[in-house]
Each structure stands twice: as structure tokens, then as C-alpha cells.
Image (cartoon, one colour):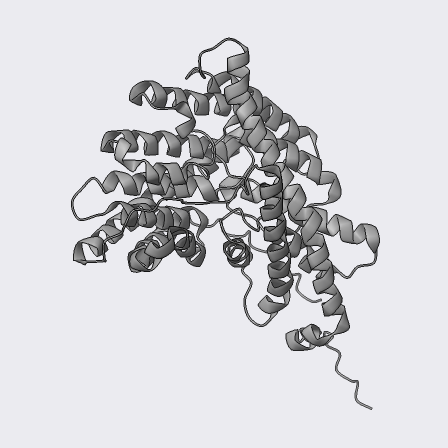
Length: 450
């Protein structure tokens, strides 16, 4: 009698997305996503409000209380040194390492555990409140996802891993619902960063969009009720943009190439510094804070403008930068780009936060500097700089185009062709300039059968 062949068990077929959507469990998943969107978006609003109040306290109220007439230009140096100490303690002493490392990009890989949330929050608040050149989006993504998973497992311990992952993503969607100016922009950022695609994209995206929509309503309501605003990216005044012409497309090529090289420099130096900081965490994180403060001091003393223009993520400064561009000389904008880019690289290497908004600000300032030259109008230079620099740092081309155009209101359709060219050039060249991936070690040869 022949012996039946023995082989590996057949792989389990992937779930049918349409069948999942039709189930009662998926309907319950949508209800849970909507319910989770309310408290998570409220907590995200509170997080942003806390950071904003601490920034005012440390840079405005405290110097005034100590008898200074305004904020001294050297003030960021000791403040960022103290922030570096707090971040180093959170990273080295608390679970979770203070969250993901921003020099390595925007991470969406899994929600943190409940025990890791305090360390992530402390490292982010210390970084953002003191003026490190880092954004709030990455901590909000982590905190929103972690809180969602914690809440679900507190109610039902045996929740399926797939459902837990979907609800964690919905929590992240709710937390960043209006940060980028629209819940759709936040959803698109998370979708592209996570690499969602195919039929399963809708299974994850629909609960996330629902949570983001609920979150946007909560942000708007709390902003109106408290009078604090919604902390979303807004450009209130957008100058008229010229219709694209041959000179404009030439500038798109120039801005795309320049952004790719600048982004590669920032990214490579941040990774190089990060490896050194991790060896002597406390000392070098404090030193990184001091150097960021010194860059702000150099800019303030050299240009006569505020040191705060070099500090922070740049999210709330994008609108005033565009509206007040006539008050900047080309030289001042070049100095701002250099100081902000160096502070950005230092902050990525040692502090905790997100990489999105500083990349937008550096690109915007660079585009405005080039707009002093013939053939490039202010709005087109601004938009192309934002998109090209954003994709150079994030490697998310669709998100970069949307961020650079949808915020411009009625001018978005005019500048979109130029932005697309600048983004594609920067995206393609960025991969050529990126360091080669480290090859995986070869597996040991298997033992020959006896």
C-alpha cells in the first residue's frame, strides 16, 4: 500500500473583504469606531491644548514673570537643555522608549501598549513645549491607537487581533482628524504611510474615516466652546498664483532637485547623529537641545527676527510665513532655511515627535526664497517647496501633493500641475540619494541528510 505524501498544511485562504463588510461583527466594529472617536479626539484636543499652553508659559509668561522685557533671544538654550534631560529620562527610564524614532520616518506599525503611553506622552510634551523642531502628528497617532486598543481590551479581553488592529487604526485617525486641516488629509496620510491597498483597504479605511469624522466634529465643538481654536493647519491668506508656464515648470524641476538633496542631507545627518545619541543618551540629548537653542539665537541675532521662527514644528507659522512673505528678504529666508534644517536634523536625532510639519516649513521657506528670482510667483514657490520637501522626508507622494495644494483653497487647481512635477522629481531623486539598505545576513547552510 503506497504511503501518502506528507507536505506542509495548506495555507489558510485570505479573508474575503466583501464578506467581512456584510457581517454583523463589522457593523458593530463601525459603531465602536464611532464611539471611540469621541473620547480619543477629545484627549487629542487636550494634548494639543496642553502643548500650546506650555509653549506660551515657557516662552512668554515665564520670561515676563522674571522681569524680562520680552523673551531674550538666548532663552531657548537653557529651556531646550532642560527639555533634552526630560526626554532622555523618558526614553531611557520609561517603557516604550518615548515612542518611535522620528529620524526613521513616520511609523504606523502597531499600537503601543498601555504601559508605554505615559513615556510617549511625556517625551512628546517635553519636546514640543520647549520648542524642538518636531511635529505633534506621530505622538498623536501612537497615543490614539494605543488608547483605542486599551479601551477595547478593557471592555472585551478576547477581542480578535484583526479587530483590535482596525480599532487601533481608527483611534489614530480620530487623534489626527483635523491636525492637517481636514480629516481626509489625516486619513490619507495614515493610509499611505501604512501601505494600505487592495480590497482590504476599505475594511480598515471606513472605520478610520468614521472615527476621523466624529473626531473633527469634537475638535470643532471643543475649539468653539473653549475659544482655543482647533489646532489645525490653516492658511488664511493665499496670494494669487500665476497660471503654469514654461518658466514655472523649469522652477518645478529646480525645486524638486534641491529638495531631494536637502532632504537627503537632513535625513542622513539625523540618522548619523541618532546612532551617537543612543550611546550616551542623557548627555547628547541635552547637547542637542542646546545646539537647537543656539541655532535659534544665531538666527535672531543675525536677522533681527524672532528666535521662535527656528523653533517648533512650523505648523502654526506656515500661514503667517505666507501672509507676511513681503517682510522677508531673500537672505533672511535662506538663513531661516539653513538654521531650521539644522535644528530639524538635531531634533529628529534626539527628541520625540513627528517629521511632517518641519519638512513643510523648510520647503515653504525655501520656495519663498526662490520666489525672489524671476519666473516664479510666491504661491507657486510656496506650494512646490512644501510638496517637494515633504516627499523628500516622508516618501509619501500622494500625501505630499495633497498637503501642498488642498490648503491653498481656490489657488490649489492652478498650482497642482507644478506641485506634481516638483514632487515626482524629488521623490524619484530621493530614492537615488537614500543610503543603500543593509543586506540581511545569509542563513547558515542546512545540514546535509545522513
